[in-house]
Length: 296
Image (tube, rainbow, N blue to C red; front, side):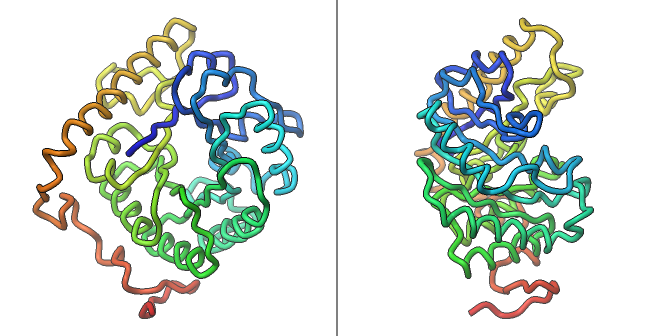
């Protein structure tokens, strides 16, 4: 992995995030029916703008803005922040708790994600589009990847969604492994620190993001960096950021030191240490009705 994006939230605390890559969600910038530019991202080395689907669809059934409005905001954003480098397409998350009033099934949500990608990628913007692979089951991700491959919708950096709330790290690994077999550089949305520590997951990624630095753990143990509540004062936020940056920087240092030492070593199972589920293997194509056919 080469990049770790710290998640900004459009508040005054964002000015603390200096000399690091930042990701900001469009959901934090949409207020009172319009987009508002953030004010404190000048310290970012590069910026990744996410469409905010995960935040929007915990309550709403559709995006409150159109693709045209999104593109217009991207142009304004780039003019204010030349560091804008990546922009995610408007995807539809597939977690079980999302609002499904309009798009009830995962396949419907995947189809809508793919159609948005097709429309948005037809527009040139002064940044790099990032397509998003959506799904929840392994076959969901396979179906999405098949559609994107047929329509040539993979981008140089492709993101993987609906993994940030998963508790089983082996599921995260398997999903990333599925998508990696279709495309090149991968970004993982909302990847927790416990997953990032796994070498085989780290090696599958170009980048990931996390907002866990914003939270205080209940017991201050390592596992608590998944986050439990927001700090109540400025000093605690600064302390949390310093602790989290130290942990992420340590991972980058450790991976760099390991690179030569590990390159000729393999784990016992499939070179990774994780068992791969039978339905994760890529040699069959998944159709919309869930049936598998031989890939050509």
